[in-house]
Structure formats: structure tokens, C-alpha cells
Amino acid sequence: MKTKHKTKKALSKRVKITGTGKILRSHQLRAGHLKRHKTNRALRRHKEPILLNKTMIKSFKRMLGI
Image (cartoon, one colour):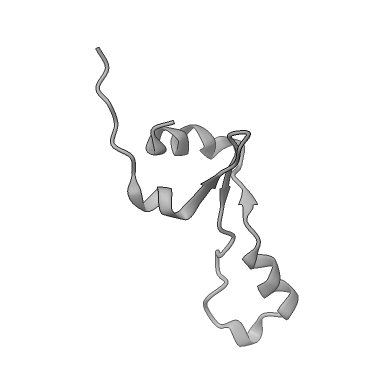
């Protein structure tokens, strides 16, 4: 019998699961630091959620208990 994994609550608050099962994450990498040197276009681009890359999907699903 396998043991159940607890859901990583910090991760579940930071990602969104779509209806088809895709995982979207926030695109905030390097967006909050030294904003005045970044263009408005770059800052807008960081607000949109992006699809998780294929290499991380397996580990994220395990952490989310999916």
C-alpha cells in the first residue's frame, strides 16, 4: 500500500490548474527588483501567467497530489 503525499500548500497557492489539467504559474521572475530600469512592455509581460515546461510538470503534480 502506498502512502499518501501531503499537498504542498505554498505551491498550490502559486499555481493554477486549468480545466484540461495544464499547470499555469506566475511569470514574476525578476520582475519586482529594479523596476525603473525595465520597460513597461517587460513589466506587462511579467503579469501574464505562463504554462509550466514539460520537465517540471511531473514533480509539480507530485507536490500537488494530482
